[in-house]
Image (cartoon, rainbow over all chains, first blue to last red; front, side, top):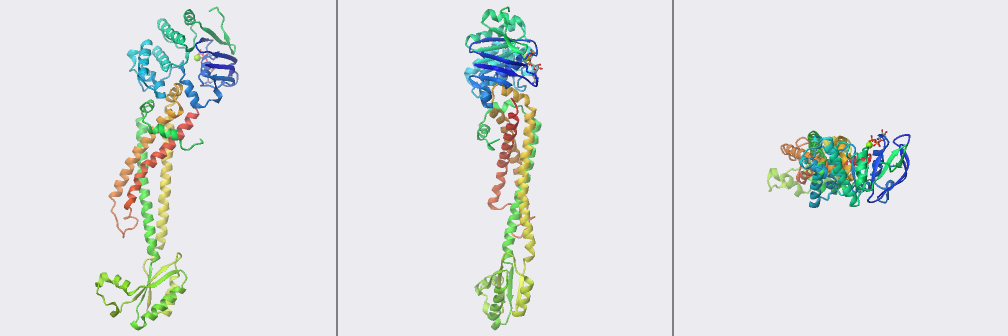
Length: 225
Length: 303
Ligand SMILES: Nc1ncnc2c1ncn2[C@@H]1O[C@H](COP(=O)(O)OP(=O)(O)OP(=O)(O)O)[C@@H](O)[C@H]1O
Ligand SMILES: [Mg+2]
């Protein structure tokens, strides 16, 4: 799905991390941890083509990221559902349209999709808020809405940056279960989080690998978790 | 920036995609400003057009009159008439700047006089002067010199140059026509600049919208079409209103007929009334190109 080969990235000057080689295989489940500012968000941005690696090679769905034009990147993003750390929405549209936005921009709305939308909204517990504008939502509601938007296109890869940072434990378990279900259907899942409890809970349900960004590189965390 | 005209964009703009229209928030103030400016520009364009066409008509008709501006009238006793006419024609033939000189036939003279004296005029029994029509070449002739020669060789001849004074006016009318076309080109350029500014402002104001759309997999074409469509349609609507007002204003201008100059002849004539109808679509085309260019430039600067 997504392959990194000796990838390094630096915003300016010193490299944030370097020499990362990793393959996110179909059906794999990864957690990404590391101290604040280590580069988790940056790593995910590389994975959905928002940043180009400073050196090394990146392949999205078998295509070299450097060789992809802007439309090719847009097409790849339709197969990648992203939950951002700072969830951004179109503030003038109601929540339901925001969640369905990936569908509208690809111009393939169907009754199938409407059914999808209802189910998703129910799962993330936002049915009652579907007519609210995004600025009226709480932090946790925004996160849940962002997750729903990331999943609406039934993407092959799900990249979630702190998807449970603002929700209570029960809700985070509920969201995790949703992601685990999707993973069992064959989706690739990457979750960046500080929440060790969440990682432990996931390990009970699914075979998850834990990656840790520290000392400017990516390590596979030990089995002690 | 290889292609200046993006057909895929044109198709996206023409296809009614309601969702693309909704993703960009409505902005009342920019809408009104764009509408107003497009209307004002179209109004001015209609007048510049009318001015150019009127000046062109004037230059052409005056120019034609100028070419046949002169006549020579020969008043002589009947037995000398033929001789003096021949002498005058000879003089004219030798005058540089005269393209053609021709004595009017009795029939033509009768036709000229008919409005005043009726059809049964016995021309051959009246001391009617013989007329010679002089058609000048491009540069004209030296009228003082011709007058002197005629005086010497054809005592009964009078050179009559009734419209020569218009020559500088014809030149002025020609210049005025050029100015009119230059004004229209400037109006088109200003419309393009105005739309570019408005589109840039809209793109900047909607940076977050664009970022969100990019992240959920919208192509540049989809994002741009939302803006391009909006500005193209606004400009079309504004320009249609402005052109309609301009046409209305032209309609209530008094029509001067043939005698009118530039002031009274501003009304359009015949099929020229169709030309202002081209102003709104042309304005829309300018808006389309300007917005497509602006949004392409802005979007290519993003990740
Ligand atoms: N656009 C940018 N330009 C320059 N530096 C940046 C930019 N974005 C992030 N950084 C820096 O890069 C480093 C890594 O940022 P990143 O957001 O990837 O960290 P993170 O691991 O996601 O942190 P957190 O856990 O707090 O979300 C930080 O030191 C940050 O200040
Ligand atoms: Mg982060």
